[in-house]
Structures are given as structure tokens and as C-alpha cells.
Length: 284
Image (cartoon, one colour):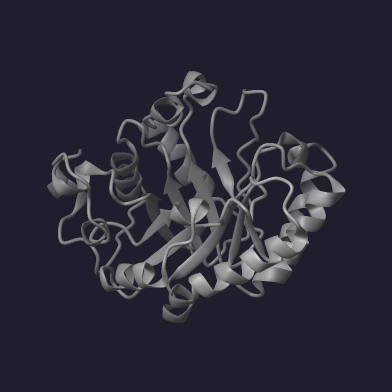
């Protein structure tokens, strides 16, 4: 295995196992003692102030990195936007993440597109505009429409992402759902391969009710399932410089225990972060 392995979770506040089960929000400083990266969804809803980002940087080691979500206007969750309006938003976004870029702590910008973003000519062209508007900034895309993964289309998608130097996210989710996409682990960016593990809760994934946030990612991966991910990562060809695994199965606070278990299984040690080993957390 030549790729660097990194792991993290979505947000840092909701992982009580990292603070011995205390029922309070975990601070970024506490989180960063255990994992080298975190995914931040704040940007999806509204761009944070630059001083907020600068404050984050004071709480983490200098080699800690952030995965930041693209704003909902950039992922076309907001409909009927004028092209000029979207382009202006991209420019504002680039200014906002400038402190992360300057410090070398922006791992990637994550575009999690809506299910209606499909393999149409217009949406294919939009991916090209994303690259143009973000210049050489790192970009990862998670596609949630099965049209991208149809025979005859998926190979072209992989090639297109390679040309644009996009990381095509391998998403694990309940794959037998009508709207689901397959788990496809492939190197489209030599710098970064990314897995986002949402869990396999079929009932929760399909929940459209008010409780969807509590059930959608309510899932704990088994050791056998984690071993499957480890095996696929080890067999990945070609090997990128880094493989990053993000656990989003946290409705039941299972993300951190699963990440710590996979860390141990793969023999990965994040040097300079954790004052305590996973064994000291009495997880195993």
C-alpha cells in the first residue's frame, strides 16, 4: 500500500466517544487530537466569515485538513439561478476559502449534487464550468443520479473526471434503492481518492418524513464490512497519493467508533495528533 490513508467524520461536534462518552459537543481541538481531517457542511448553507475559518486554523495541527462542502447555489440545489449569479457565488466562495488554501489545509471542495443532477448535456457542461470557475482548487464530486453509472456512460464519466482532475467520490449507501448509485472506487485524481460512507440503513435512507435526519445515517458497519473497504482500498489501481475515508453514518454516533476500528484494522497511525490510542478509549 503506497497511498497515504486519512480518515475523518462529518462535523466534529457529535462524536462523544472521543471525549470518553461525555454528552456535550466535541470541540474542534479535541477532535483534531484523533483524526487528521474533517468534513464541514457549514458552507453548503451559508459561507462562514473569514475570521471563523481563521479561528478554526488556530485549533488544529498545521497538517490537519478540511473538506468543505460547496454551497447549495454551486451544486444547483437552488433552481432558476442566472449564470452570472452562480459565477459570482463561485468567486465569493474562492475568497472565503482563501485562508485554508494559503495554509495548505484545504483537502478538497466537495460537490454533493442533488439526485436530479443527471448525465444530461447541460449537467455535463456544468461540471466543466465548475473547474473553470474554481481554477486549480481541489474538487471532489458525489453524484446521486444512477444515469451517470449506466453502461456506456460510467467509463466516459471516469475519463471526464480524470480530464478535469476531479475526485469521483465512492459513496456507500443502500445500493438497492431506486435512486441509489453503485459504490465505485476508482482513481480519477492522482492526488486524492475519497470514500464517503453513509451506512446501509434501507428504511432510514428512504425516509421522507420529519425524522429523516435521525434515521437516514443510522447504521453501524460490521467488522466484515469494514474489512471489505480495507481490501478494496489496498487493491486500488493505480494508487493515488492519498485515500481519504469519511464516515457519515452518525445518526447513532457510530461514525467515530467505526473510523477508529478501521484505523486499527488497517494499521494506520495518525502521527502527532492523538495523545491516546484507540485501545485507551476502551473501544475494542
